[in-house]
Image (cartoon, rainbow, N blue to C red; front, top):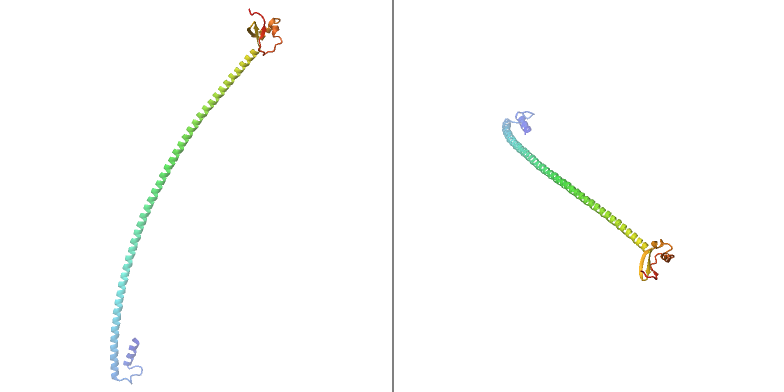
Length: 224
């Protein structure tokens, strides 16, 4: 547009060898055209300037609005971040309380279990000690019974031995006894008594007679 206006202006001014071909009327028309075009150009320029101004205003308004929206969004994000931080802190505090309570319950449970185990161990120890004492008493009583039985057996063996000795003595004494049948009447005396009367009739009668023979010796006399 500017190059066309410039060319027309040069023609209107009579330059570039056209001064001899253009008439005065044409020059005036050219000048009027230039004036019209210049006016139109100025109006166009004004319109463009107004359009740029409006567009710039709208852009500025949009930019301000976007900045406000961005600021609002940033504030919302900051508020949301603060809320999330508060929620996280609250959640962390709750979880720490839960963990502390769980640890406390665990400690209490361990303490109770340990106390119960110690109590059961003590009860078991006392029970074992009681059983040991009872076993020791039973052992001592059994040993006393054994010793009593051994004493009774020893005493019984002693009595049996004494009885055997007495029986042997009786048998021995009976084997050394002699019996005389004098006129139907029996007389009994020891062999040693008769033998002490050497040369007597009774000593002669038992001479050569074996001990242990219980048959009486007959003497045909009146016992009186």
